[in-house]
Amino acid sequence: MSGNNTGALLIIAAFMIIPLIMGAVAGKKSIPTTEDFFVQGRGMGSVAVFFTVAATWWSAFAFMGSNAYFFKNGPLYWTAIAWNLLFGIMYFGVGKKIWYLGKLNNFITAKDFFVHQYGSTKLGNLVAIISLVFTLPYLQIQLTGGAYLIETASGGIINFKIAALLFYVIIIIYVWSGGLRAVAWTDIFYGILLFFGMVFAGFYIANLLGGTTEVFAELKEVKPENLILGNNAMGWLSMFIVTPIGSFMGPQLWTRMYAVKSGRLFNLMPFLLGFAAIAYIGSMLVGNSAVLLEPNIENPDYVLPVILFKYAPFVLASAIIACGAAAAMSTANSQIHSMSAVWTVDIHQKYINKDLSQKQLVWVGRWTILILSAIAYVMCLLIPGLLVQIGLVALAGTAQIFIPTAGALFWKKSNTTGAFAGIVAGVAALCSFTFVPATLPAIFAGGGGLISLLVNLVVFIMVSSLTKPRPTRLIEKLQEQYKAFYEGKDLA
Amino acid sequence: MNKYKTPTLKKVIIVLLVIGFAFMEFPGVFFFRNVAEPYIFGMPFTYGYTLCWWAFMCVVLFIAYKANWGDKAAPKGKDEKGDNNK
Image (cartoon, rainbow over all chains, first blue to last red):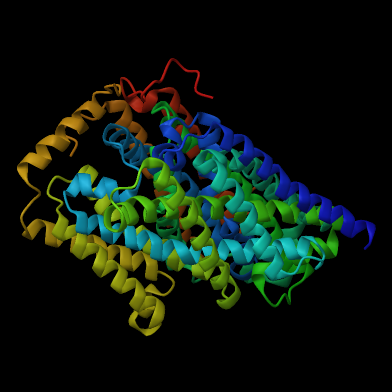
């Protein structure tokens, strides 16, 4: 084993051990209740909230997939600058209300919100199923991306299967021990790595070609089509809307709305999350530089590792790649944890064993983490696919939940029938556009996710307008809580 | 479900944000999709132009935060004491 390999393995070891230590400390602070395990007793402070939201929101999709998109499609992924801002604004505009209602009514999952707002368990169950079904493939791409990065960072000493296994064993240990607290604390570590890794990689690679100006001047000669948006307009708009909404509606983000301690923090998050979007400048520089340095890369998802290991010192490349693995791990840990909450609270507690104590429910949550991880591991070994392609379909699936969520919060006429019909129509359209692409009119090419969301919206409005509204008593009860929110009443 | 009057400052913030998003997303699609020049900050037009609007949005969002988004007061959480929320 060379000195380089030893250095790389030490970096990977640190990357694995530090979160374990943080998880162990978080575990000591835990108390065995579902509220503590799944939403940290609703006491998450500002630093942890920012980093856990940002790191969960930025996944392998952002770290690796973005480079691939800039490499293949020019500025298309640059719409990410706008979607980060949109995500932050939604976290404030919608998330703060969900947080308030969650604290008032002790919600733990998205289903709790829907049952409360619409008075329908069936609708809540549909939301829980969509959360699980569409989050699983997104989890799988984190594992695939993360495992590949660890394999690459180790110089092949740790192969893909072992890397994926290591990746999940680490997550399972600290989530098992510390629940959301452990996830949030480790996300601080991952978030810092992720942000600086992205930015540093971009400027390092661009400087090899003389700097940003030189990269684009040369690109103008070599591949001018990479400098313009061209015919990607529909994709530009679709990604701007579907990506933040889909991510925002993932179970991991619901958890991160309920867990927040202070309402004031929501006011600051749009600025923080929007400002952090500048890190995409790193991916943009890597993707565009790669067109000049390595134009024939076979799998664009692997642009970053290919470039780094060829043009940067091995240990430095390994360190940056470990940052990429951090992106994958910080999303995967949150997804596993929140999916476990959905299963434990929404399904197991309601339909399998209603009489479990809080301590027993936490144990169900832990075993669920183990089982979900195993499923994702098998999927990762069996299902190949481009990170961004799988990610976009998965996000378009969870995005369908947004329409009835906004309807519940902002439109009095919205009702269960409309919400149910809208979600079913939206998911059916999405499946159709994904599995039978010919069903999507050519003019909307690249915008299947957006069109399915519009189908959902139209059906939701039409059906809600034509059917019986929610019961007056329910509306009155909700109005009281909304009134308290708008008047800025503190929670007792 | 909100039948309470939205403060004027909040309305201004919302309008500014909508303008920001509109200028970030639509000109690129309708007018500049095949435009690479002029270069801004050494980057092709789409990149530099979007960055300018990003800066505008960040300023608006920071002002919005400082002005509490035009609201009188933000609701506090259970057991929340002062501003020691680290």
